[in-house]
Length: 400
Image 1 (cartoon, rainbow, N blue to C red):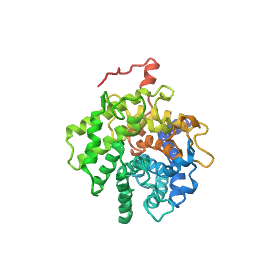
Image 2 (cartoon, rainbow, N blue to C red; image 1 turned 180 degrees about the vertical axis):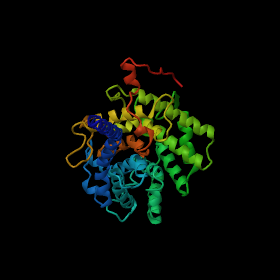
Image 3 (tube, rainbow, N blue to C red; image 1 turned 30 degrees about the vertical axis):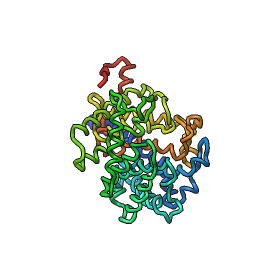
Image 4 (cartoon, rainbow, N blue to C red; image 1 turned 60 degrees about the horizontal axis):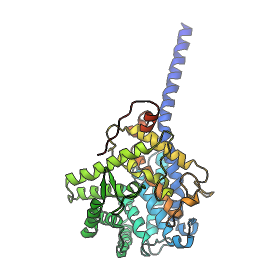
């Protein structure tokens, strides 16, 4: 009888240990993403919250002095665009919640310093034309955290944000979607907005749609990841604002969303069994920014039919670990360095500098999902290319 009791105790002990380890495995992916997001975000937000970003941010670029006047808004606007959904979850007593809480405190101070003309870190919203791009990313980020960021700012700071973003209206160029994004922010925030600027950006991008979930970046098609860096996510977010204000039909919204879903489907299939993907096109130094559309569809629970949240989690985690574990990705002070998988200065075009690199954060949008979401809780599973190359059954693909 004593032996039986001992045996039962051992069984219960090992079952409990296995259950705990199984739970830990499920949480490991998310905690890795949280820690990496914190590692990327902290140097930017800490410096800017103290009015020291212009002092501290290193400027790596083909022409450092030429890019210096743009780098700080690039770093901040792009970072906020990516981490905002995670910050929107707020603070709690967990390790992750404490990380969010610390970054939220820094981010609110950083926003104030970025738009306050009296701050030493007041940013360039006026010297053409790069600020239009990064003001749009900042606006998009604020929309992605309506409670914890935008709603937590005092009225004076909100007015400063609107005033700063309004300065970009003086730029005359063909970066239409960035103008449209800023105008949709004004509409969303209850500020005066320019319907013509917004409508024109949408009309032109409809003209530039090439089919099968892909837009041209202008009238011509280019093999690159700008459908993920900018086009699909901004079109989705703009149309969500328009829907909320009853300025867009359900038919139009569904069309835009279905194109984004299709592009996400293609992106998931681009991820090879080893967690790599083709290094094609411009701006590869944006790293995980290449996967923003797939991350956004996961965040919105709009993944393609037949693509499970778990397989996307596993695929994106493999990609991100390949990139952020590569030697030279960060410098000794924790700032990102130019590269695709490591420090590869030759991957930085003339418009790339240290600040530009923080667009990698838009590949972290899935952190805006609750830790209890299926995306994080479901057991690990193979993604499409792993199934295909291991002899498993997998769904064939057809153009939409």
